[in-house]
Length: 110
Image (cartoon, rainbow, N blue to C red; front, side, top):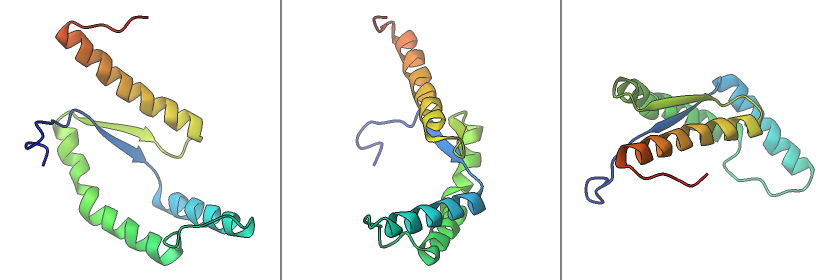
């Protein structure tokens, strides 16, 4: 699909999280939303979350080593506060954009 669109993967972002903490956070968030009367996704339940984590471990996580060997993997601690995670993700993205701009001679105005 990427080749058809003439696209390349130049960075892979990985949010590092402890699966147990992630599981607890999602279950707690869904429960709190339900208690406040807010809409909760039907698939935000313990059984579905366990299946998602198993699928990630078996299908997606093995790709991390491949992208690491290619020099494309950038990891961010996903258990930090949202604003810090967001800032770090943007830093990775912006570093890539800046490197790309340097490589082709273009610059963004300050």
